[in-house]
Image 1 (cartoon, rainbow, N blue to C red):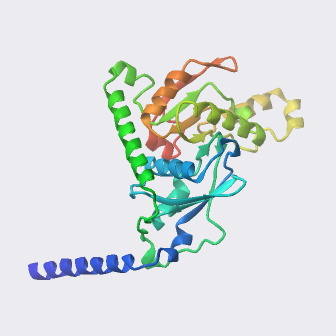
Image 2: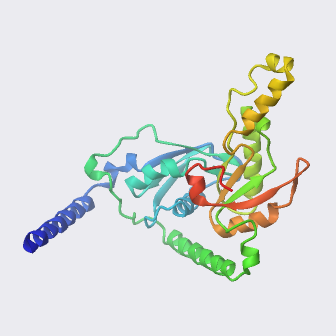
Image 3: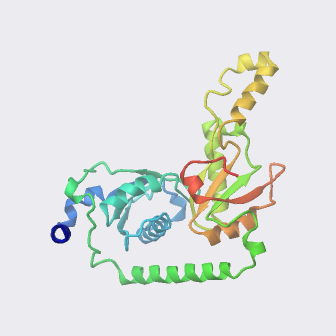
Length: 298
């Protein structure tokens, strides 16, 4: 029996080695259409370039859990600067990024994430394909990434040396902030008003760091449709407002930064501000709760 088990393990190892050899011989162009994503609604006013976007998306996907070395190999931005195509090294990373980048904002604008028009899924045996690092990937970019990692490490070290009283203000520090007393349910029903609030929050919060997403839960859309009936009965107005307020997370704003230190700086600047006559309350929020769409945790 031990020999059979050992033989099975050896066979599995040989099979894996053979698959790796096969992967290495695949022309990257075969999987390129499955490794690219379309990114729309870029902020034209920022004067974005291919290198700027490559830096931004490389940092962003790394902070969201993608561990592939040099995860993005190229970015192409349109002449008008309104959209771009981002090419990942890994087929699986591109698939995951469709979900991970949902809700991502840049320059106060909510980015649109999708597949290019020429998208083609890869065959099953190439589902885990990772393209080699292109030889033309600049050494300067690699050095820049290393420098940014050193800066983040130094920032985290500095943050870790602060007193517990400072670190624990607003709860245990995380990259996510929960903002309270900024919006009411009635302000979130109209699409234009909702988008205006979301853009204003994103623009203000980007003053303190790289904002990955701004999430503002909205009330049920069937609230307030029948204005005539509401006017006839004040009690109905009260009932409608209660119905709106009971929607999970309505009245809360969640801002996710690229790292914990940026969120800490933002909290220091935002907590206690006056907004619409109200005092803004700013707390840290667990990342896992946000990812699970649990907007009611306290």
